Length: 355
Image 1 (cartoon, helix red, strand yellow):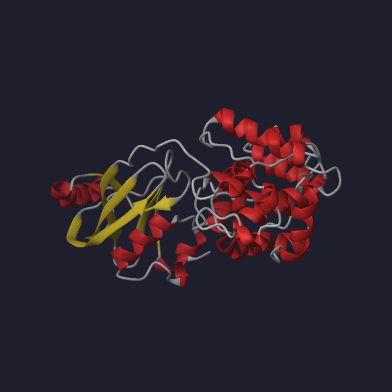
Image 2 (spheres, rainbow, N blue to C red):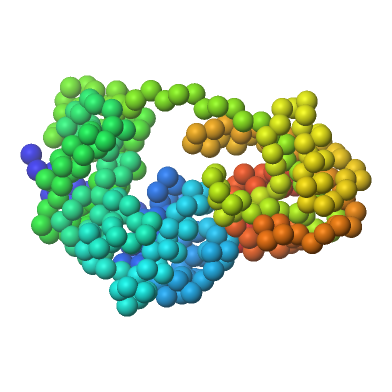
């Protein structure tokens, strides 16, 4: 049974009203697809609207600084996406006259644009008959075809993409791709899929065999290592000292100074963070612990508020004194917001932390 006709009929009546579907363009598709990766759409919508208000075109995005782009991405997570988006805009302006190229192959050559994003933009924005395999697509197809191999294996992903591509209709390929994504988000969910509402249940091998609860399968993941750090909210009474991460996790975002330290060594480590910036700690107050689970690590940050006197030297390029009222102007991760909030004795959802 071909699934495209049934899926498209369902999509036409069930699809969610989203801002990038109301007003379409290749650029808006690119932004929405990058924002939606690893993030729920309920979170994405307000970020998308603010982002498009400030960067309404590829040219506007290419002309912006990394700092400004990161500030408008602040809190959305997976910050490499923001850097990649701006890199792609710069390349499109320089190499394609300020427009996105209209083929999957050319889109794939833009810096920071991966296979899924290139296929999604090519299909949705330009009508290319290709299949964009995201997390929802992996789950939907693994159930439709009862694929029992782990979906995190490259060979399995390649097989599922072939199966998906074979189902893409010549007409409305972009809507078909979105219908698969929508089905995975609304009906074919990770837990407790609503098979009674599924427009392609009769064609689903997992449903027929009673396997929906066990598919898709993934390879066992190793336990996340626990990383303990001392985190210092260094303040001169009016401003906070922030550091810009130069590499690794949360690269390009601003955060409180921190270093790895066991709980017993944390107070001394916090004092040393102030000393590293040429500051002398006058008072050290333990404020609490923030736990943040990242993809590959479980971070436990012990937060200290450190009162300091006058700086002995000016901050470097990767250090900045910031007033609490100006935090919304910087690219802050949710992790940074939590640690700052604990240090200030505030709630992380303080509007001043938002762009």
